[in-house]
Image 1 (cartoon, rainbow, N blue to C red):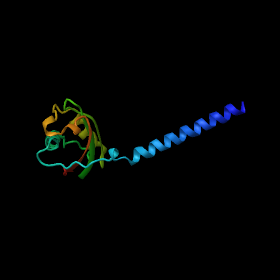
Image 2: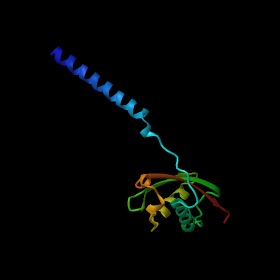
Image 3: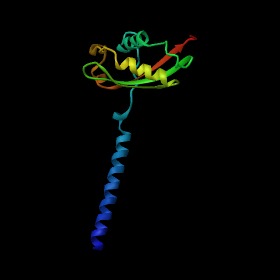
Length: 134
């Protein structure tokens, strides 16, 4: 019985070392780096920004006055549709409106404007909204 316990403990120890070694290797490979994507005025995201500005409801009285900074995260499905929209920022009501607008757009990203590595990926886009006095 004592031998079986020792074998079991040794097996757990070996398994633990294997897990740790795998995690260390995964964190040191170059495949896990996040590359910065430079945006230009002719890319698909400029169209998304313009559609967001055109469809944003500025009349809601619950919005924080002044400049509201938000960050919106979304995925682009293989068919070009914007999905899984999540936004956070200075005003939760503005963030909800950003999510609402982008989620309900009848817009599909033109796959020709994105390279093959960018399709069906997550993106982060800063959004700055200026809410003037009503």
